[in-house]
Length: 394
Image (spheres, rainbow, N blue to C red):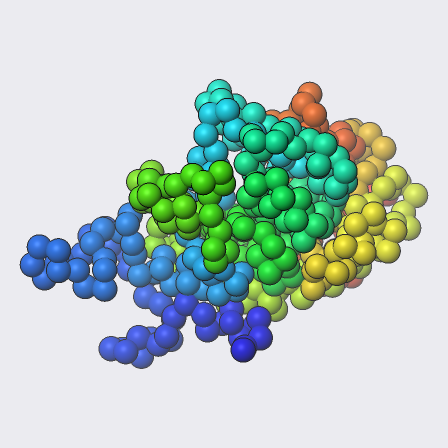
């Protein structure tokens, strides 16, 4: 059995037998020659249905997450949409975090809601609240973010897996914030892992992509079968992946695979820098709260220490007012004011007005004085100094 870093470097591709190329070629092609009708070379006929570059990424993602099958999509939300339309039908119900990513909430409430799917926001770090929110016979999915976006709450994946499976529901974990370098939800009982590969997997802010990784043996709930007649979640999602066609393009897949190769190394630096940033923020008089699982007084610290191999590169903090939050974001020089996260460069944003504007006035509304920082891999001292001077100027 190889270690994680070795797996990220080598999984998904063997050197090309013809040329010896040590990285996968970009098969920038729409269609493939057939040797007679139905005579497919390697099973490839059309790049929506299958492409060697995308296949290399999918194999690598399945390996690093310990899953049976991975599927790469054009975006993280495309992956979420395909999964939820696979698992849910009109009249079904799902639980979502009460501080879920704004795009997930928009998809659930604005797209699936009119289709007849109901949802309940709940504190997923409160197991009693989760059990109370279940609707026997109709709750099909418990959707987990851990750590959550943007408040960095931590949920106990193994405990939620027990709750979900006892209720006949599928446990889905959005692992984007932790990445497989720090957390592997399938090993803790989750059925499906979701990624925005745009973030830490890609790691360079140069690609949009998403992925699903399905656990071996994961099945649709309540004796349902997918379009092929199989109860397998992997088979059903694969069918929709092809039928709806929101697949990752070859170059995007290649960029994500390139990023995956250095994920382990980058996450070490992200974690170290974020820990330093969080510690510095705790000591500043202009900060009213710091949200980072690595802090000993974080409510989810013990769970995070048990199920993660590091506390991640995301830090959020509160500064007392929306005006101060905007001023802090405007005053940084090393941190760039921008949406997204997980790149090598540090980013800062005001969630209430940016990434989470879609949940304003809803049960998922985030504090308006919250600032979210994606801590990059620059020099630790420069990052700390930048935030402290911005706080002093705000």
